[in-house]
Image (cartoon, rainbow, N blue to C red):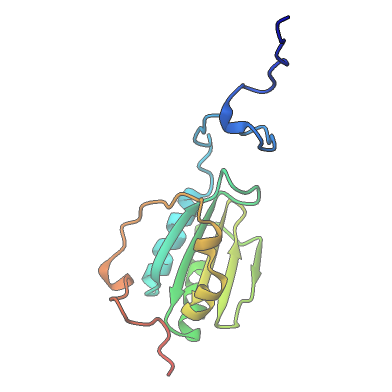
Length: 164
């Protein structure tokens, strides 16, 4: 008497054995068809750099979230600079015809969030940036390569915050 095997389910891959099926298990990743928001995020980056923003990171979150396509993260050296960077981005994008759908924590000096729909801009004081660790939260998000001037990078060992 021969033993019949049970019919296989799924794609038969051993990689999915014992894992919950999500529908995305072995599907090949395709780049998203849209780059909506990239031009705005790059313009926001330039406006932030004009106000001496530091350590910019542009995250491509198109495959990871539904509320935006890109997240720009920058830092300022002081609470006043955080506010100045935020104001510079808002004013510059307004001249380009873009207005934020929402803004959070503006004027706190620690962190500002500007939501433009397809892209979001986070402007942090460094201590707040380390606390929220958005780059760690979005660790799976590809980083968009940026040409960053040397004065927007901090030398090793230097801190962002000028206060003692």
